[in-house]
Image (cartoon, rainbow, N blue to C red; front, side, top):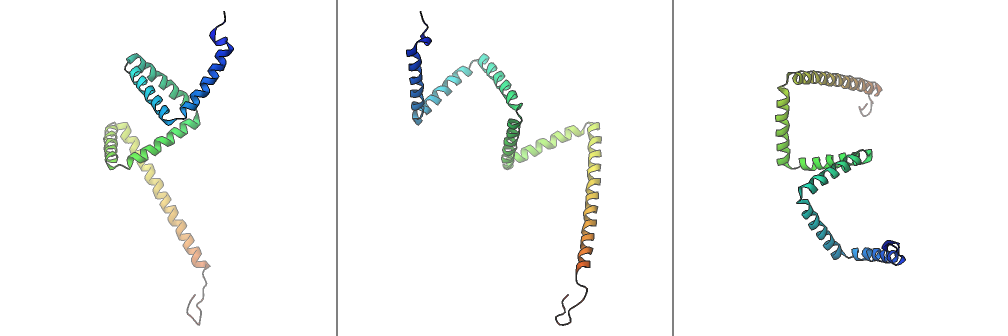
Length: 162
């Protein structure tokens, strides 16, 4: 006795059903009904705590697998950055985030080693900034002197211009 899947009739019927299913999914109403049905079924399954835990574990594994791909990780980081920029556009969110950051920084500064490291970093940043400012000033003075030297050194007798 042959199994049902081995019958040629079953194979041709399955192919026809697949084509019919694709054609049905082209109808927007049927696709919406199917999505609503799937969402309701998923919501029903999620009521079970065992299913929820298994789903969380599955999602965690899938996420870590996808994050191993550098292109996915870069795209996700870019999405997160853009989302954060958008959220910071909201004044309430920005104020709350600034307050959280201030509190977190104050808490970290209570640790003496953090405070010393932060003071060292600030000293280095100030020194670098001063050095850059002095370098930029020196470059500006040199370029200004070069421009003065490149200018004509006589005055026109008829118009008084250089």
